[in-house]
Length: 151
Image (cartoon, rainbow, N blue to C red; front, side, top):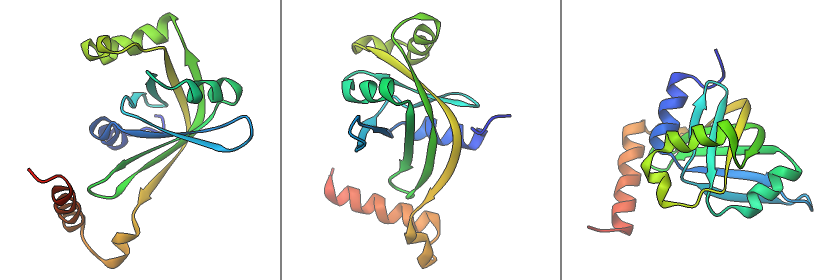
């Protein structure tokens, strides 16, 4: 069994948005959100390069990667550390494109990035240090976002 448990798979599938951190050639960080983040199997995450030339260039130079997937309402998530491989064609590329299905046809997907996950760490907001249960945290942030984007 790999590092990506059923619970983690469900979380990533539901949340979708991953924040991808790579290393620029000058050693500075690059952070880029990817709404195509998926669990590929028990050891791999994947995402599509739609408009990510900097991310892809960084990964071709240095495959070190970290992906954070966080539910903004419950303020919990996961940090995935590993190494990435970029695919512009071939079996993996085609399989991941097929996985995305028809929605992928709307975009010009340049590459697929497959991430071998070496380490998974949980992310939990300090708000839980106050003793608030998850339902109250969720309701607090739903109310906040409803105030930002009223119906």
